[in-house]
Image (cartoon, rainbow, N blue to C red; front, side):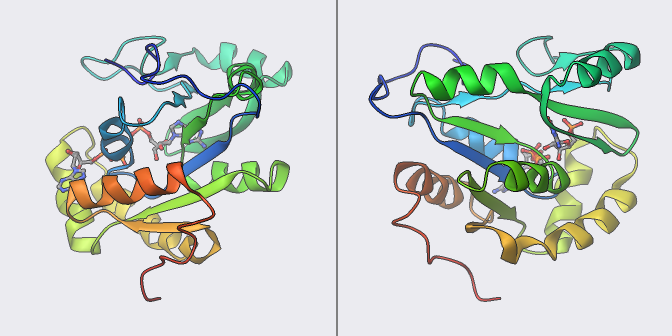
Length: 204
Ligand code: ADP
Ligand code: 5GP
């Protein structure tokens, strides 16, 4: 089952859906955590557009909308992105229409994006709920990036991660992804009750 198959329960149509922004450094486990909630909470996982080539196993339209550079330019000119950013060698953006349609239909929407894009969403939609995923330590982040094995620029990603981690205090919620199931349970509790679990930050 993928995130965007039929939801496991029907959201209430009497209120618009909420927008959850899950951000944090590359390799911290955002994708792993969000996928762990599939079937445990009904949400639409935004499918980003990107100019990077697909990795083995990735499917156009499910994992990303893979665009050529000139197509990305056209989407930009047509104002089709809710936010977008250049991340290392490639551009990534959130298609606006799908997000707006789902929210209007009363379905919660999750964006899994990097911190610069999250900042753009905050400027345009301060009511969105911002969640920062943190690694237990930079050493752990390095191990995860290396273990994933899809990037040779681990050092560049770690340097960027240091800068990104400094932004964590701006977020409504911070979740340390140490034991996966514990972090998934925390994320689920934020989805279920974003205001109720407000003061659960780790010590700064
Ligand atoms: P992101 O989406 O933030 O870039 P991923 O979800 O791709 O990160 O996770 C990066 C790597 O770390 C993957 O190999 C994943 O299996 C692993 N990982 C994620 N969370 C944990 C965890 N809590 N404990 C151990 N390994 C993890
Ligand atoms: P990857 O190439 O590893 O799939 O993604 C690289 C980074 O881009 C990750 O941190 C991911 O969260 C981020 N990302 C993916 N889609 C988007 C998007 O639509 N907008 C922004 N700003 N970042 C994105």
